[in-house]
Image 1: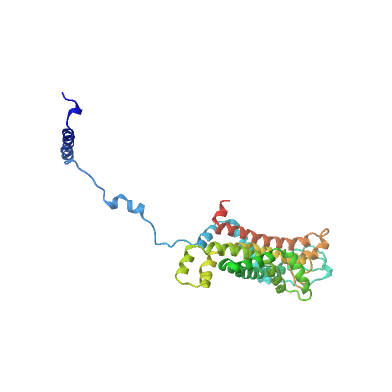
Image 2: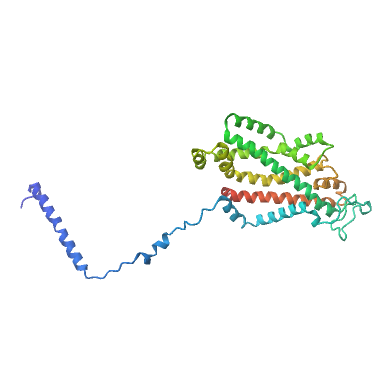
Length: 343
């Protein structure tokens, strides 16, 4: 019998081709045997794939503010701080709803008297109703905090946005100006400047002085936020469509850079209330004719050992108001910054 190597190459290929040539015949026999069997094919609507793969594209994507609100309304800390802030604002705006006694009506016969009917907190050394002065003191303190925060946000946002958006020489100039003011302590600078207005100390004076030295943090935060936003794709698209630089800054950049500004402004409001109380405590803030928590705390120092409650009530009102704004700032930061929730 000849060896395989002795068979010509053409014959070997012919033998292999004969093997493969029989394959179609075997397949035909297989399908012929299965031709009589019943088969079931499910319809497309019975498979349920359409329901599984369906995507609800009718609803618009939730914005950052909608997501933040959905997070905030589930946080008890938000509601606690919101109630305290609302109470402080309503008390400052309408003190007559909570007390019908004139806070400047003082009688030395009631000096350091204890609580009585209609006077739940008692009287201070001058015979003034402590409850009435605590209620009416909210107007000056909260007004200074709110007005100073508004002024600081406007000034700091304008400087920071201009520096971050335009860059170049303007950025260098405004950044160095910000560094100069940032190096000056807020309270120390306010003490020095307020000495120039001893005869003309009003709420507006305190607001202007605090805003003059309190805008630096907002400016630095705004500059960083604007620099991170101005390179986004939607800004490039708006620029390609021919939008002006001011239109891009106003309509695209500032709305998307507002989150850190809002967070800081909420915390800063409490800081400015403390700053006003500190100036009034030192006797260079609001004049004695204006009822404020800082002024009452300063006047209560003489009675601290014998009657500590005289100092306690304006101090606790100040502390709760400041604490409510700080708590609101913390929870708003967590809502607007998802990374902060994971820390």
